[in-house]
Amino acid sequence: MENLRIKIPKNLWPEKYISEYKITNLWKYDLPNSWRLIYTIESDDIKIFNILLEWFNHKDYERRFKY
Image (tube, rainbow, N blue to C red; front, side, top):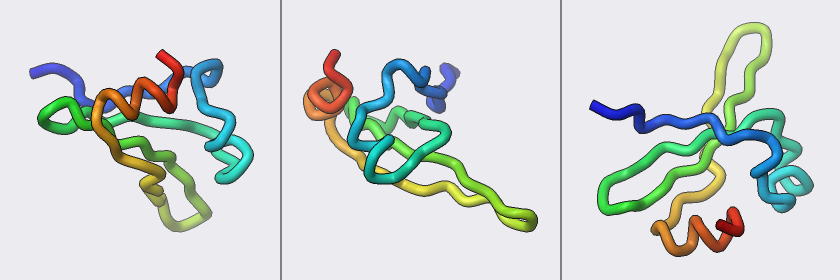
């Protein structure tokens, strides 16, 4: 089974995520039917949080990431 979770390199992060969400990491999860889920991971001393930023079809994903 292929890896569905992929860390997105910093040089590919959309400016929107950097400015609006102040992200320090960015991940993509491949969903069925070519949909994509984009999220970041944050933590404090006790908890780890997955924060969902967007999900979209492949066409909109390519538009957002300028592929």
